[in-house]
Each structure stands twice: as structure tokens, then as C-alpha cells.
Image 1 (cartoon, helix red, strand yellow):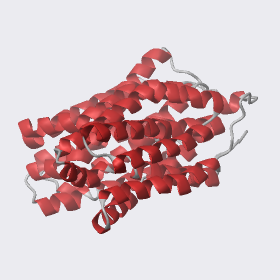
Image 2: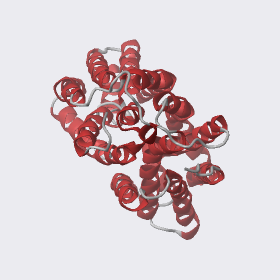
Image 3: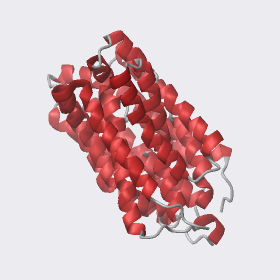
Image 4: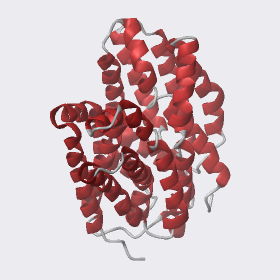
Length: 384
């Protein structure tokens, strides 16, 4: 059993996660329009199929987590590469709405087996309560998934076709993803688990605390996905030009990585509740400064991105710190069901809100995050 976080393990899993996110979650932003145009469909079909895939991720999360708790994550993550490759090949071969939806559902199963929740559960299974640094490290590496994935996808699509882009990512899963995940240590089935590495003081009323965390992460993922889908449009509604809105939105990615680095360097000595409380306040602060005091759009993008980057880490480290690593995978899957469900619905719902209220939709997202701050303030740090 590994007793301390490993830089090699973090880099390997972070690289595999970069591939997984770039070839699934960040794919529709580039390929939705060319897929829809060639098939004679509305782009809503592509995003609808993608939302169905995210709902499947929510449904399968607890079962995947339980599987990782029992046997470790290496095999599960390798299976995710195979499933995503199959789904991407099916997407490349699709000819209409039915085959398009089928392909995205296969990719959705692969996402359930292979994105952050599965990666965090794998680290917890291998490293116990010492997994916090590696969880942060994995999110640091994979934080560049869109930065790397979007240009690659756009280049292949422009030079050849969107089908070639899907096939290329499928080959990357087979030739790069499977070997990377195969390098992960194999967790012992009947490991002699030590109290120091795999247990943690539990909070009072643990089930109620799980419900509180479920709200926090649901609010966080709703806001994160809504901003990812509509941030340039939202900033235009606040009064800036399209070019300024796009330039400001591009700062979210670097802000996420910078905040994760700050969490690793400055906040890791504190309980993850501290980082979570800071993270949930940054979006409301940015929204208030933008809408009431005329702060530049870039300032809002930086504050939102920083909070979002820290929330991604908190989704793994908070349950680990509060409940310990025993049963982490299943517990994480249950906590994240509302988050993944709202994540799937966020692009549609928030688009309707912008249609109705314009930049005023930021007051709703700010309220969601301020309530999350209050929820985290109500959770006491367990003694011990």
C-alpha cells in the first residue's frame, strides 16, 4: 500500500485525465456546429445528446464509486478509455439523430468510469487520507484539458473533418490513455488498512452533512457549467463587445490553474472547508463588482475562474477530509448525483435565464453560491 502521495502517480493520472476531459466534456464546444450542419440537424440535438450523457454519468456515479472501493481504480479507468474510444468511433460513424444519441450515451458511460470522480476515488483507494495533495495535483495537470483539447480538435476538424477528429481522439485513448492508466498501481483487494491512512473523524450527523455537501457541489457545478456554456454571451449582456467578452472568457482557464496552485501552496495546511468557503464567495464578489460597480469583464472572469478551480479540488478533498477514505468512492458518487444532474441541465436552464433577465441572471448564480458559503460555514471541522 502506498503511504505517501507520489509525483509520478499524480502526473500519470493527471495526463490521463487531460485526455479524458479533452475528448469528451470539451468536444461539443468545437464539434457541435459541424456535426449538426452535416447531419442537417439543429445543434440542440448535439447538446441534448451531450446532456443525456451527463445524466448517465450522474446515474452511474455511485455504482462506479462502489466498484473502485472494492477493487481499485486501475481497471475501471482503463475500461473508461476503451468505452470512450468505442463511443468516439460510433460518433464518427453516426449518420443521424438516433446514432448520434447512441454514440454519446456510450461516451457517457466512459465518462462515468473515467472523469474526476473516478480519479479521486482511485487516489483515495491508493493513498488513503494522504490523497489530498495528489487530488490537487491531478486537477492542476488536467486544468489544461480545454487549453490543449480545443486547439487540437479545431485543427483536425478544419484540416480534415469532425469525423477525423473523433477517430483521432479514439486512437489517443487506445495508444495513450490505456497505457497511462495501466501504469497506476494495482490496489490490494484485502489490503491491511491502517487507521492513520484510511480513517478520519466523522462530522456529527454524517448523513445530513452529506446532504449539505450535495447542495454545495450541485450549486458549484451548475454555476461552473452555466458559465462555461454562456460566459461570452453573458458578458455581452453586461455591456461589453464580443471581442472583449471572448478575451475575458479566455482568462477563466488560467485563473482556475492559478487558484489550484494557490490552494496547493497556501491553503493545504488548513482544513479543506477553508478553501471551500473561499471558493464559494469569489463568484458572488465578482458578480457584484461587475454589475454594480462596473468592474472590467476580465476581473469577473478571473474571480469566477479562481473560485471554480478551487471548487473542483474541494469536490474531492472535502468528503475525504470529513469522512475518511473508507467507502469514499460510493459516498462521492452519491454526493455528486445532484451536481451531475444540474450540470447536464445547466446550459439549457441558464440560457433561458439570460433570455429573460440578461446579465441579471448573475444574481441567481450569486445567490446559489452565497447559500453554499453559509452551508459550509455551518459544517464544523471534526476534532482529531
